[in-house]
Image 1 (cartoon, one colour):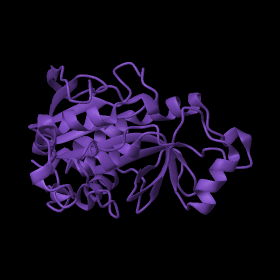
Image 2 (cartoon, helix red, strand yellow; image 1 turned 60 degrees about the vertical axis):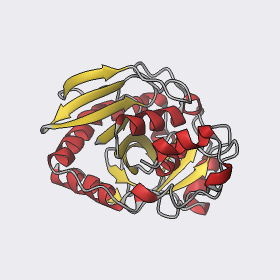
Image 3 (cartoon, helix red, strand yellow; image 1 turned 45 degrees about the horizontal axis):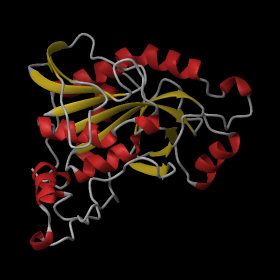
Image 4 (tube, one colour; image 1 turned 180 degrees about the vertical axis):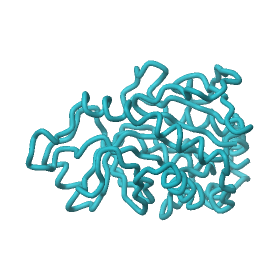
Length: 281
């Protein structure tokens, strides 16, 4: 089953038939909002607004572990993360879609970023963090809908909630060689790997961050919300097109956590086994 995590301004799946809303709990607390089950092309899909139903959660306040756990426990096996992003390349224009293949973590270490710990040691491989089949299907759906899409790009995740300085924008653009910048896809993408979920980002470019010389191109909240709101319907169209012919589940990603655990079963605690029962299913 596929799940959609909605970003800024993407709080509901309009024009999709709502089947039910599930108020769920997890070992890590409540997810950002109840899970909504919607139907499209005869398929049921989970939807979860990342910032809450009314955008009440800062990027660093999002309970990423609870969100991913809730989706995995409910039966999701593939996750599309819809996100607003700033462009660090002139060729990636506001209104374009980006399906990144790499992520740079420029957060500050305050976010709970792993399901491992407390006596359970695991080291997930993140060399190839996204599902190639799901990413390719997203890009194809964008093109089929007539939208410009960029692939094989790098998403830099910053802490927020403030917007970046010009120095930071140049650093991410010129030193990191990132292509887009956002505040939410880390640790989400890596937690999805630990939960053996196939993950891909559908990023919508809303602005040029602040590396351009012309200050009228510098990012503001008004610009982000306006441009993302204008393009939400296009994002829904892309998701709908993908659901008409969903890609197969990538079996390598469905085994990512099982290859990462170092702690022998003989010394694992009962809570470790409960955790792994959900992560490894």
